[in-house]
View 1 (spheres, rainbow, N blue to C red):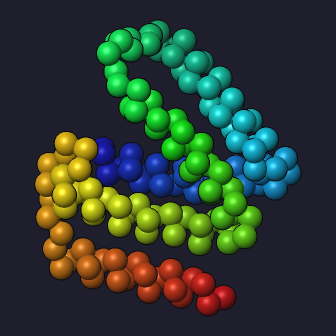
View 2 (view 1 turned 30 degrees about the vertical axis):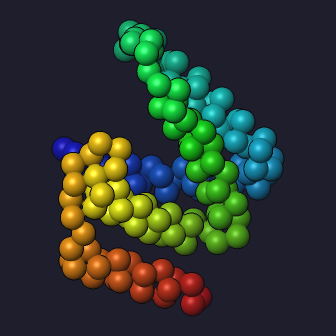
Length: 140
């Protein structure tokens, strides 16, 4: 089930980059970011209402843990700029490459309290294949 959800997430991200990038082309990067996040806020409020979910345990959470929202804003802005100049496929390919490299670093050093998963040569082969694919995508 987790594999399917991860695959579905990738498909949704591709669709999201298209929608957000197109909206950004029409309204500008900053206005589109406000619209995107406002619609997201409304959407999660509706989901929370129908699932009868509540905001619990907000006390004692360190401030830095809330900064994921700021990272989300930067992600939307950067994707919108990339989409405008590179298109959806190259923007996503480069984003996934960046995610792969940073994830390997996080795993290797066990950052953020995660278990250590050492870098191995198989990952080098995977990164090389991804790099070649991105290079070939830029040739068109």
